[in-house]
Amino acid sequence: MNRTFHSRTRWDQIIYVFVIASVCLYMIWIKQAILAAILAVLLIVLIEKIIHTQYIITSNNKLIIKRGRFSKTQELDFDNITDIEEKTTTKFGAFYVAKYVLITYNKNKYIAITPASPSRFINAVIKIKEHYIDNES
Image (cartoon, helix red, strand yellow):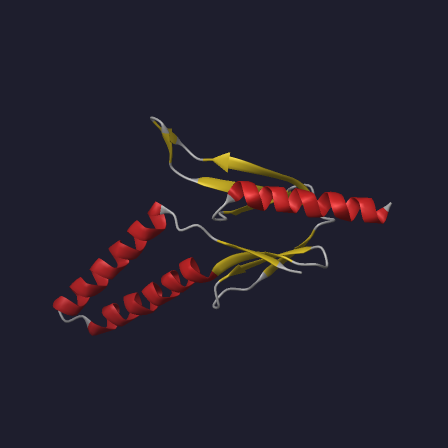
């Protein structure tokens, strides 16, 4: 059975989409059709990546990271994952700018992901990894 976790939409992604959309509308307003078309395509790709990013834990002990239809999927074996932890970026007062999950694999390679519920994602990976290690013994 596969378990799918969707990505959380961060505030900086939303601001980035609004900025690109505003510049695109301004380019339409001043009749710069080529620049507006390029920005519209960029906007479509950005929105698609934001909406369709998902992290799939498969039944054959793999973590599949899909970052939209226009990006290449990435597969990680649970054998290669050495560490997984929840991290935060800069703190402003009582608020963190962003929370993410940092996965260490193949000793010195890292990948940062932003599942909608980081603690559930980490618990699911740890549970499957422990079950996988028990079955190897």
